[in-house]
Amino acid sequence: MTRRREKTRRSTVLFVWVLVPAALLLFVAANAHLVYVAYESRPDCVPHLKEAGNEGKFRAAKSAC
Image (cartoon, rainbow, N blue to C red):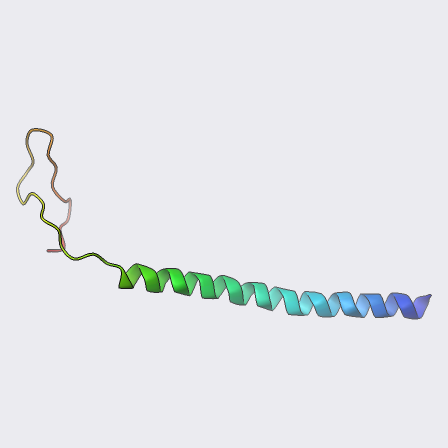
């Protein structure tokens, strides 16, 4: 019974040592993809008010254009 318990413990430890780095790699890859998509999908400048708005119209707080 002791050998079986050691074998089960060994396989559990191996599973954890494989699962944790795989999960971390997946997390890092997903975040890298989000950063990539955020930089690649920046829209061009769109027409907007340049002066203070009136009649319910607003302008960009800090325009990049």
